[in-house]
Amino acid sequence: MTLETTAMNTNPTERHDVIVIGAGQSGLAAAHHLARRGVDFVVLESNQRIGDQWRRRYESLRLYSPARYDALPGLPFPLAPNAFPTGLQMADYLESYADHFDLPVRTGTTVDALRAAGAGDGFVAVAGDRTYEAAQVVVAGGFFTRPHVPEFAAELDPEIRQLHADDYRTPSQLADGPVLVVGLSHSGSDLAMEAVTHGHPTTISGTGHGQLPFSVDSRAGRLAWPVLRFVAWNVLTLKTPIGRKMAAKMRAGGPPLVRYRRGELLKAGVNLIDARVTGVRDGRPLLADGRTLDVANVIWCTGFRPDYRWIQLPILDADGFPEQARGVATSVPGLYFLGVLFQFSFTSMLIVGAGRDAAYVVERIAARAAAAAQPAQRVQASVS
Ligand SMILES: Cc1cc2nc3c(=O)[nH]c(=O)nc-3n(C[C@H](O)[C@H](O)[C@H](O)COP(=O)(O)OP(=O)(O)OC[C@H]3O[C@@H](n4cnc5c(N)ncnc54)[C@H](O)[C@@H]3O)c2cc1C
Image 1 (cartoon, rainbow, N blue to C red):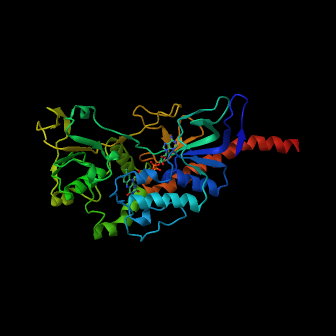
Image 2 (cartoon, rainbow, N blue to C red):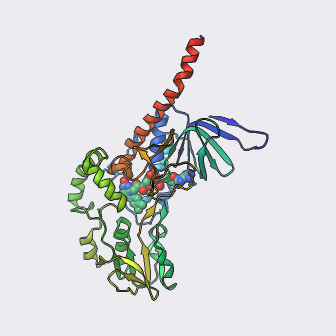
Image 3 (tube, helix red, strand yellow):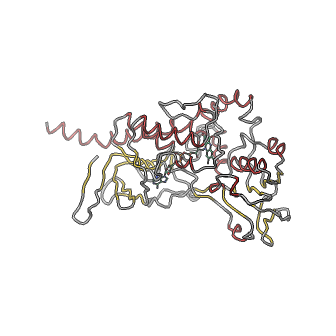
């Protein structure tokens, strides 16, 4: 690491070979591989504590992947292999991972802008009044980061309590009375289950994106996990036709239900309506079939969108997804992504896949650094 100040600017510019932005599972896995190769790097992380993105998620969150598939390279998850960690346990695991490997993570450091360095190769990351420079940068700031709510939500009667799943923590945030969950997703099914078990008449609107033939909580689910993991890791990759088909489907929609599926929801008393919420009439949510619903609460489980506005480089395709091949930015040499939806395989969005994707990206980083160092080494050799 080097530090430099100029007469104009008393805040030092810190230089490293590599900057990693984000210390979630993706950024920490990259950090682990960089450290093993002896690369000079730093990880910049917005949160005051590593893992806070998991601590902020709803309190009842239980992962759908068992602990044996929730570990990053080199450090087992400290729970029984078949146990499902809570969000808090996942947060603490990430924090302990950085401690265990003594990874150089700067918490409380939000990168507001990433741009090309003025002259020659490399990048400048601006975080408040601090500046970081590096020849190569890994963007691991999470993929689906901007909660999406349809515009017509603003027309709902102000008496109806509405919130996005991202802002939901506990059932105490709900008003007395019926709950409408918009979106039959993982979080949609989790939150509907929580609402109905807390006495709220609960409806989910939406058809979802299919479901596993068994719940991950069942005995069949426990037995099937190794098979699911094998398929998601080896078969559902961008190298296979079925994987590419699945990637397109995931990009347009979302993953299947794995814990609370239609059967479990119906059994608990949740009312499932296939018709989507398409607007608002007289202040009430309006369904595609023309009905309106008289509810006291709406929880929008309508997903997230990527948000790369802080990257001032030509990285996005027409759909707002980063243009990359297995994490290597295709139009900006030296820039890399991790945690992108189906970056290489189905597992790219899962904890279990973070280590493999990071290893690949770090290998590309090392190869590029070695290639850049070669001419200099040749000059040195010819001088001596
Ligand atoms: C409710 C829920 C449950 C899930 N359950 C599971 C599960 O059971 N099993 C599973 O495998 N996966 C699960 N996932 C999916 C996935 O593992 C997580 O979404 C995971 O958090 C993604 O990891 P990541 O490192 O790519 O991004 P994140 O965890 O989002 O980490 C990104 C980090 O980057 C930081 N950051 C972002 N922008 C900046 C910036 N500009 N400057 C500095 N820092 C920045 C953020 O603060 C954050 O710490 C779940 C996701 C959700 C939402």
